[in-house]
Length: 214
Image 1 (cartoon, rainbow, N blue to C red):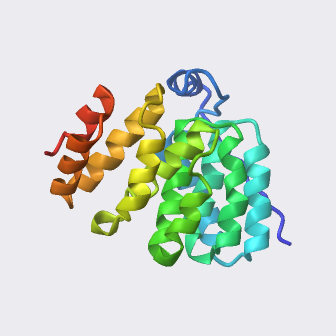
Image 2 (image 1 turned 90 degrees about the horizontal axis):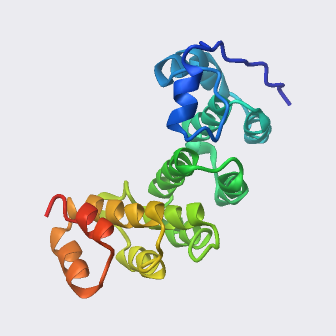
């Protein structure tokens, strides 16, 4: 198994502002996104030639590192190699959502899972069930926003289940996700979203977000 040999070169002057943006929940090296992508590009390119087991070990190692940029790199590796994954890999990746969790990492995992179901649409329900009704708000946020990239192919029964489970949940990140998912789908099926909003009582935040394009 190929060993991971990678470190970022950060700018300490950037670190305090980056930490504040994340409510000081994480320590940063001070590597902003464009620079992070530039520094990690060779590793990402190399990762295409690496077997899935090695990639898993790299992701585990990066997630364990203290600075937040390394969790971002782990996510980049998982997304960059999404074509390699099977459902068993997605189940393994689920563990990371509750590690060092916040909206940034949860939403990036959701992007990865969303790309996965685009490649394997027949597994949409199976992936959805990994997160639906979870006691963890970040996993439930993923259930709600899992199909953001599905365009007009959203499985509306799954979206409905996810939203109604959290219909009265007083949590900003959940209500924002409900509005976000409905707003995105309204670009492709506005009549369905309008009917949904008329049929179910949602929070003011969710309705405001959902109605943006209606």
